[in-house]
Image (cartoon, rainbow, N blue to C red; front, side):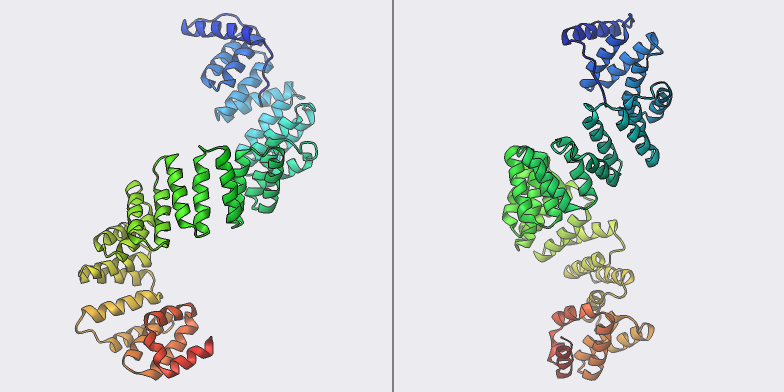
Length: 467
């Protein structure tokens, strides 16, 4: 917190001009304490902190015992993140200015940064005790703001609630309370506070914007969209509102409107990979895989390491039979996440399409190494071996696998598929029953890929009995 001197503006300007002339000439001249304060305050208000520091250093050379100048220097150090230097000054001032609330406020702020919560809270209490009634609201705001910034959301909330009746119409304090509720995931109370703020001032774009965020967290996308629309009406250049509105529209399935909102966001911002990625996702959801691929490509061009864009580019380019692009995308993705069985399997499938069986087999093996109990990996490998290796004998291959691992549900699904193909219905059913016990969620996947299983009366009867 900074209290500014009340020197008249004309006198301050003359003092500042004289100070700047001396700095240019690398000279010094006498200024009294009040003049130094006015010079400091002038620069501080304009965020010209380097000149503010020069002024205070000159002042302390001339008035080394001035506690008010030392306090201003501690405030400056606080803003420059020179916490050790600031605390040295404040520990001294605490002894000689024991009733000065700003000393204890600054000490508390530094101690929150150091993670010394009990000490900070004690000093904040002293600051609140000694501040005037006129300054109390400012101190409550400063303390709650700094508590929130350092992650002490419960303490910030409790402080504001204690003073809430006194400052029920203070916008800054209410913002801090809503922020604390948001961080504590107390969404309903956060929404209530933002609505109170908007009752006080319906043109607060930050309140509407934050309200939209909380509605999104509630998955109340309709109200979120309305909040963002009002935000945009008040502040049409607030680009993040378009972006968040687009996200909400995508959640409601309004993909065309979402794409338009993303485009509007980009017109107010710089091109960025995440927007192109989301636009691609919208086009993919609309079934336009060609356009989706183009947007995923744009996302990858801007951020070649964004794995979700690479994964999606691989997927949609595979759908439009652009297998070379699919291979490029999945190959890049596995270099980023080599432990992903899904990516290795997808890369293997893409190599299969361009008739590179050795590369396909290598990738499918990596998928199995990464996730040995994934039914899709075993089915894919089985299909590959059947299609590409003339001497492949499925049943001996299967029996060898099962001899090594009877607890793998994916292998039992594979056994059900293979025995079904060779018309061994009893064995097929037995393995399907075991597989369903071990991996029940994969039954639908297997039946979708191999509907012939259901044509076996015993299996059809078993499946119907389980539904």
